[in-house]
Structure formats: C-alpha cells, structure tokens
Image (cartoon, rainbow, N blue to C red):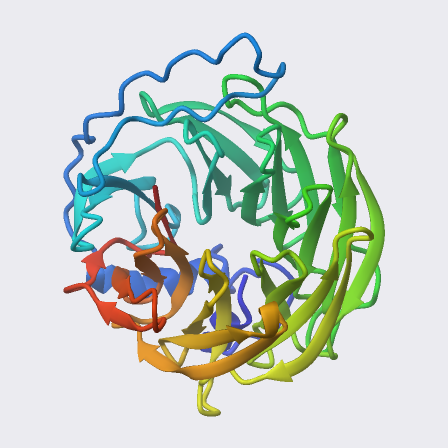
Length: 418
C-alpha cells in the first residue's frame, strides 16, 4: 500500500490494504486498475523458449546451496525480462509477464504470461539465476517460487502476514526475506537445493514504536540484506523506523539489534546501500524526501541523516525506490507524481548525495526501477500508465537517454531484467 495511492482515492490513511466501500478492492489495486486499463495490449500466450537445463552443482558445493550456473548468452543477444502486476485489478495482468529486451537498444518484446501466481507485485531472482520469486500480495500473504528452466511453479508458502509487497534473497542463496505491508511483519523462508521454499523460520511483527502521523499501524515495505551479509534491515513506513536484525544463517532466525527512526511522518519506503557498505540512501514516501544514512557493519546500526530534496519541485510526489551504480558514482530515484527519475552524484565515498536534476520517465507513477545486469540500461515500471520505460545510462555522467517508446504492460508495478 502506498500513501500516494491512497491520496488518489481521497483515502483516510486506514491501515494496510483498506477496502473501498462496496467493492472489495484494495486502494492499491484500484489505482492500478484505473490507470492500467488504457494501456492493456494483447500479449502472445506462447512463452519464449526457456533456457536449457543448468549443469549440476559440483560435489564441493555446500549442502542446501547451489553454484551460479547461467545460460550462455552473447553480450548483445536478447535477455529475459519479468514483469510484476496485479492479477485481481481491473485491467491488470494474468500473471507474471514474460518478455525479452535487447541489451544494446533497450527494445522490449513481449513473450507471453506465466499464470498461476496471484498478484505478483514484486519479483526477485535467486543469486544463481535459476529461480524466480514473487510475492502474492493478498490478504493471506504468500511467496511463490518459479523454476526458470521450464517455468514450473514450485509452490507457495504463507508469509504469516497480510499483503506482502517486497521480497529479496539473501546473497548466500539459502534464505528468502519478505515484508508484509498490511500486517507490518517480516518473514524468513528457507530455500532448498531446487530453489523451492520451505516453511518460514522467522516471523516478526513491528509492534513498537507507535505509528507515525496519519498511520494506524506498522507497514513493513522492504526487507533486505546489508552488504556485510550478517544483518538484514526492514523498512517500515507506518512506524517511521528501519529495524536492523541479525540473521542466523544456519537456522534462519532473527534477533533485533537496533532501530533507526526517521523524523515523524517521513514514511520510509525503500533503502539502497552504497557498494562501499558504510552508507545507504533512504526514500521517504510520505514527506517526499530522501536521506543519506551511515551504517556500521559490525553492529548493524543505521544512522539516518537530514532530509534532502527529491527534485519534485514541491508538487505532490511520492518517492519510491533508489538505485546506485555498481561503481558507486551515481544514484537514481523514482518519483511518482512528479513522474521522473532524479539523478544524484554520489560524493565523499558515499557520504553525500548531490542532486543533478530529473529526467521525465515517459510514463505515469514509476513505482519501481531496476538496472540491467551490466548497468547500461535502467528500467522503470509505470503503474498508472501500464508501461515500462527503458533508459540508456551514461557511465561517465550518469545521464539518462530514453530508449524508444515505452513498452505496454498491464498495471506494470515491477520490472526485473536478467
């Protein structure tokens, strides 16, 4: 659930995925349906040829882990792109969108739909590239695993909470982390050797501190691993807090080690680390600001800096997500409302952001952004226009150049290029 999406409907800010009177829809889904209906196009139902089977892991691989074996592809051959949507929204998709993109031109070609996964609004891939994971953003929240070699759904597991909106895979490949927006909880699931998920090993609900201004409960919006690998951080929009936990990498359990509070009413949404590992950048959805954070790898403690501008020029805007280039030189922020991508120069070894300007996103409500693996392309999933925009990234200047017309995709809320 997004503050911006509630505002469009004139919502009261009720907790979680509040239902519109008499409709049974969440406000998040309603906004996507109204916006996405105009952009829906017919997509071929025939899936693209799946990659060949992966080679077996060597005997030396640790039990329960897999080595990274990826299909052989040339640098300019088409690459896979997976698209998240809401299947229960009017005008939404029928499942996970399947597409390919040209890594040289950025052109996207639709390849069909993977059905059988309800409301897959956020996607992540296993570090070895073999398994795709999706949230099932519903009242009875779940996470689903899909084997990419033959696109077989390996099953779903309950998160123990409501309306999961984010998930990520621990870099070691053995644990899946997920965040439940409506219940304000985070969960951990084991990942077995096939990529399938086991029953959750941890579930924590954020009961304190008290909700921030305009909020009636906790709203966990993101759950990620810090660069040190031993700590995982949960960003909660409802409590204006980022929680740091120590992850037991053998048992999959969580121990809270610290909390970082934003200013009241900031509504933190997404956190992205600088590759140096000692700084991170926080997008505050409610008060339309960003902040540079300090991070101590030894303790897992995050320190949130002063609010900074998003480049929205003071209009209605809800920042969504940060990206940082692999070399740590530039950062990009998705602005919903201003409908732009803000560009920042990263200075002082990650300790400072300098706003360079904004670039129109060529769509409406860019909810999520992602780099191609080589960092040469930036993808923006535009929820209300039902499109995916692609930009060429200039490595030297951080400049963005639109790569042709945006690709139509029903209620596009996540784009995952591989």
